[in-house]
Image (tube, rainbow, N blue to C red; front, side, top):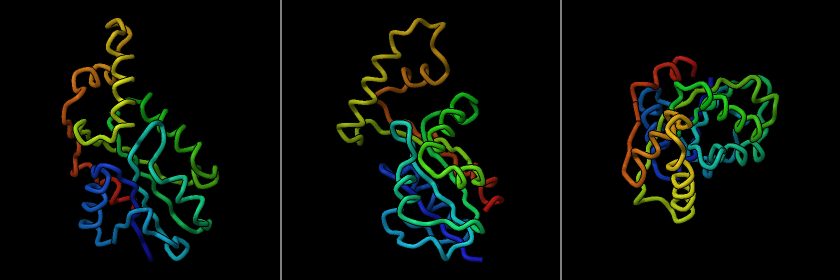
Length: 175
């Protein structure tokens, strides 16, 4: 059975997870920009960082390659949102459904992992987006703030790392 790990990572957190999955499974991991043919693989595990409501590289990967019906497709998102909060995962799943063909979405196994952020390393565009979001939520009355907005307020402009490499066991079992 041919397997592959493909990832989209801008700042390195998703790549850390991909490298750890590669080490634990013995399956090679490739950046989505370096993969040119997925048709020969039976199982494809795609990890993508969450940016502005989308999974980095996922749509481009799906447009570039045809996935056949016999293949197993696993999608793993990596972001700041806590995957233990149902509204977060619902929102992420809607974003995924908008990025890939519905037949792939319906049969894909989807997992969510927490990532991290180092505001000092963000590109200008992402710094501006985070600042706008922070300015929007910091003035919300406390009763309108949820766990995510409170976490954003508490960690804004800091280095935060929620990476948990021990959380990969369920993904490895599915792969």
